[in-house]
Length: 534
Image 1 (cartoon, rainbow, N blue to C red):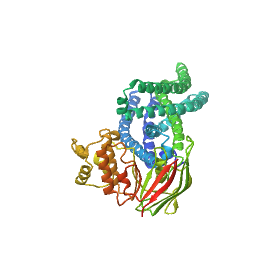
Image 2 (cartoon, helix red, strand yellow; image 1 turned 90 degrees about the horizontal axis):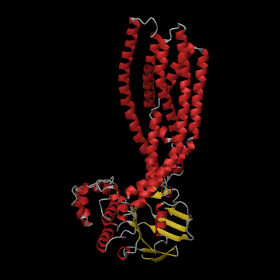
Image 3 (tube, rainbow, N blue to C red; image 1 turned 180 degrees about the horizontal axis):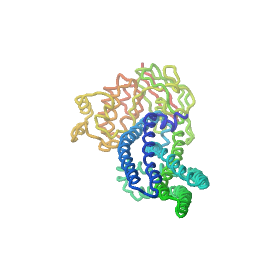
Image 4 (cartoon, rainbow, N blue to C red; image 1 turned 120 degrees about the horizontal axis):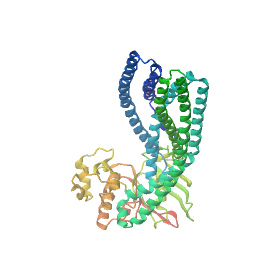
């Protein structure tokens, strides 16, 4: 469970690079805090030329060294954090591809996208925190106070510990508000991205007030959650700042009293004022780190939920027989069950599945694909349970999803094909108009194939499936929503190029059904075999 959750974000860290970064940070912080401490040592009366030369020399030398080391740190760590962010994205993507379709169906794409963006941002913050600076600033401050007054040291220590405890307590209390805010933000983001990705449909509906109203409403709900969260961490900041000021104020007052009594504390006063400005930043950084940890914890819950069940089944490309026996598929929302008493698919079979819409054709397809895990009965591939293996099946679905890449990239993916072969296929599918685009097959089609018509996308989808060269294909209504001429083009292409494949076809096109040797039909949500042709 742990490995499948948020843990992958830290498990893949390059420990050597992180250690190098911490060492550099420690060196930089030591130089930074050494300067005000030097002032405390040398800004004493009488302030001689020799002391002035020492102070100025240390200042110039330390600043020069710090500039060089800071450049080196930025070069090393900023590049590594960027590189590691990419590693996180890849690892998250790998896990996401193993999430069952049943689980993915519960989430909007924008939601899944936002999770990794937030995780990457928070991990960067946590890794970039001033951990060494916190230790050094406390060390220099308390050492100086201890030498000044033992009583003042214990008061300052007590107040600082109290400051940390109160900060953690208040921020921990705000954790619930963080989770509520994230839930609201993800819902808002999902809706917003959904409207944007379907902006053509939004424009065509010409009902902008409706969509703008939903966006505004969700935005206001997010604001209310954000307001509760802000109240928590602003209260923490207020209390923290007061608790920080008190020990510094007491230390400076004590130094001023000592100065009035003839004790040379001018350097100590200068040190306290100098380091206070940095300590304020350090506590802000510490508070921000604690907030990031709590936010990451909230995201961890979401990842555990998302990755709680991964599909690690072995994928096979070849098979001899697929068999479904006594299948009963139940849906909570419906009053009926989808049943399949028996269905056998052998290599080379051309299976036709017919029936009215809503009878169960899509459900059977998803069962064979392994996208549904909650069913009664038995599904076997080569006598092995489908719950243990998954068949590599090519799918020509009703849903046409193209990537925001070139036409060639959408078609070939990782396959190597010459431009000449691609153009030949496109012409056969009468997609010559695509070749007339300014960049031809190197035209980027836009998100979800925005630049192409439904008929063009459908034909590109079929060609892409064929070029994937699978042993078995599922054709789910491959000619739906096409005009007669385009339908004929698609049917002829299927009959020509898919004849040597094992096919499972859900269609009412008689010409495609002519190549089938087994005919199944849905009636009253029950699948039965009508005819077998030897």
